[in-house]
Length: 447
Ligand code: ADP
Image 1 (cartoon, protein in one colour):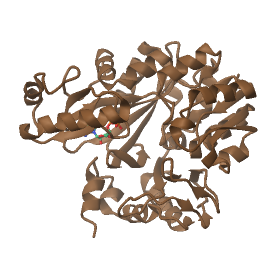
Image 2: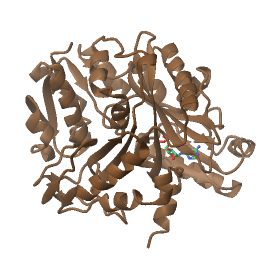
Image 3: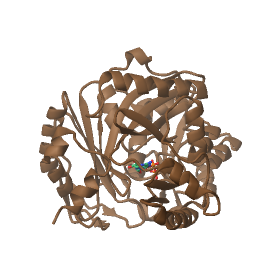
Image 4: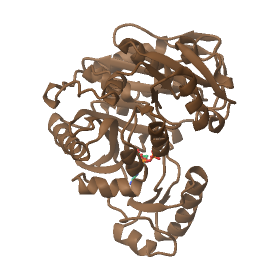
């Protein structure tokens, strides 16, 4: 097992990783920008190192500063969390060159899945169904029009290096295609430094359903069921739940075993998520994320498996915690991402938290790094915290969520709490009857 882990992240996920380290008896090193000197993960870590000024590129993405922090503190492994360097294959390789362990998959798998075109090709080879689309990258000079017509409009132009919903443009008809291609390529070039784009059939009313996997890197791999992340705004997840209201145990077992077999063949190491769109009873692979995800607590609540702790154990050479047969889905869980944003315009609302009361009680969990008096800096994401609720049934979970949302107090800044309080009372949400466009349509209909 590792002696000392450097946590190359901030906010709630840094705290989440710190908790797992403490339980495993591993010393922790927090890193922080000058803007985060008072952050909770810094206060609770055994040691901390300032790695630069507020902009991420100068601090949380600053590889030389992170290496120096490892060197100074004698850390033997780095946990990247999500975002920042978590899906940077080069970073994983640089750590290895410095005799440091990267708590994540093999660099080759990060690289493979980081290119969505290659990821789709790989998925297909491994027997995973994919969204119909172009075989590879397309440009305006190629036969993009012919390919799009063969797929059938509407089509979605997507960036090969895309993430966070950026570099994606819909072409409803052939008239829109050229503009969609150039806009998506430009957006991708400036966001990811890679202008390559590809085409996909634009599905009308799918759900976003993703399968959590865990692999030992030696050919052992299991799945831990699914999360339904269909409630999105601008392709960003807002509410996640598991099990999906749309799947029955047979459908879950079928897609789960397809995915687990693929991971066994890849000899995948650590935690990962295979994302699908699900429409009319069919699954279509869209991408794989080779890191711990924001919504991982949903799976923890219904399986009882501590994903971050197991991720660390597996990175240190440990075995899978359970066999596939031992995985039991217990009850229902919902996560709300409470952001520091205006609940109607979604304008970021950084600033000082004057009052803070996290809800509690049976089946209620808060993953957050804020506290009363904490100032949410304007430089990073706007997550205040994740409210995660568990119940024996979906109905009990919703009842508990309603109560917890009403109990939660965050004052001084604007938050998206009012949105969740409304959602949890919406008939479609109560019935589990929603798809990936539901939330935007709902928001468009609001006064
Ligand atoms: P990113 O990596 O930017 O998050 P994804 O490929 O994971 O991109 O897609 C994000 C979201 O965009 C999906 O959850 C879904 O809502 C929407 N989306 C992606 N591909 C399609 C598609 N072919 N048809 C319809 N919606 C899509």
